[in-house]
Length: 243
Ligand SMILES: [Fe+2]
Image (tube, rainbow, N blue to C red; front, top):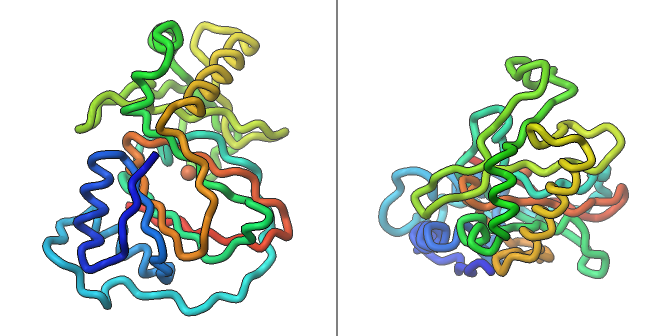
């Protein structure tokens, strides 16, 4: 579970405290514009001190719901870890959604706490066989290697050891491929499925059903996130801002 913070004059201070303790925080009823969300994320990340000017975080004007173009489910992952420039804080906000057909749920797991709940055998396997990745379409990231490249599985954060993993996308032409060094494809898939299962079985795992105006702040150095599918035509909009 992750703490809930009220959108008051102390929101920056309270959100920082919650992020330091738990890795993520829910702010209910924020209802910010996209620029307001970006300003809030920057203030939490930056050197902002004291109470907040209530005009600093612009509120949204009412948005007319529009049909989404659709999005495949994103597995548990850490943003921008493949390109070596991971963001620190991510803010997600729901503008509108249809509660009767939950879609685009935000899935979160705090790996600093979850790592203590994962079987030692699985952690040993990840130590012995680190993850490697391949990005078939490198056009947005031409500096990435053409072939498979490794990224560290474990990372040290101020809160403790965390997992830095990006799980595979289960679609026909995935934007990235993942496997374990030294294991064949079937063995790799089995280990990655088991890791996904254990992360989702963690006491810190949540799948957040959006209420419009909710903001979820995520410390990308320790919390992995995933997003469930958004079917084409769904009335659903979430915005993501990061620093
Ligand atoms: Fe992401």
